Image (cartoon, rainbow, N blue to C red; front, top):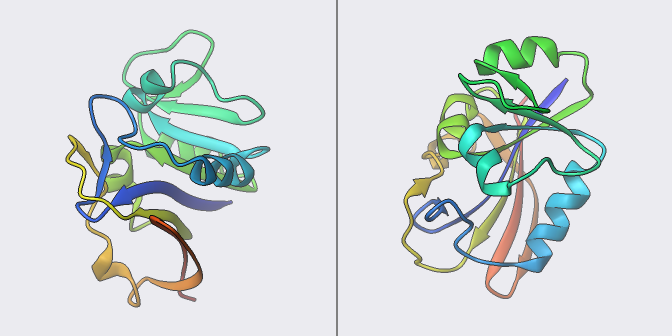
Length: 155
């Protein structure tokens, strides 16, 4: 199994505000859909609640202490990853606590760096110190107002 984080964050590492994305970037949403469709997505309960429903054409896994009707739910990341070990790709899609618990364990980071200073209440964990030590920049795509950066784990 290859395990990836996919997230959009700004210069303050904000990823959410009041249970929502603090921006709307259609290219980022298209990239998210392209990368995750046909694969497994893993998220915390708050992220699932913010989506309002399971995302189509993906296996949706939620980490929560409480069972969620009609959703595959596990009480810990380790439990979920053990069950998912035979999946080809698993994308961790949030939120902040789940990213914090997995950032040192993943095979890659698919980040959208948003060029703004929006405040929020959910943050991506510090990751800059992991670049070059744990991960290297594999691909970068610069757009007006945001940059896609793909980091892969060093061998």
